[in-house]
Length: 176
Image (cartoon, rainbow, N blue to C red; front, top):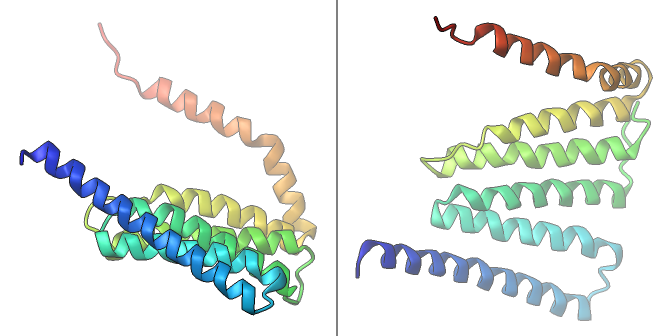
């Protein structure tokens, strides 16, 4: 076989692996739901199970792309679990903020897993998404001055775009 054909076969093999794992996890959960009253826990169990499938696929294949849905789903699962369990945390005013903090943790998981289990992509861009979500989540969770600061930032953010554009224009090479 030539190289492109081998790569296509390898890609199909990875897809079959992930597809098979997803079917097994969903099947096990559906079977379990028939015998055990899972109730409102089903949402975070499904999200967590699918997250686990993608993370295991990423580890097994050493392909960092699987860590993206794995991390996102893990963050969602943790956020849903925190809202279902209604975890009481001192000084926290808003459960939606806690959900965002949990979701941000899932985004942090993407580059961490990529760095540990692969040699190519690091997906450091996910840390930017995580930082923004964590900032908003922390402000929403603790309210008060943090929420006021977030509202101010929501009004002045275009100034940062303008400043960035000016920096780019001023640093461009001059011809002539």
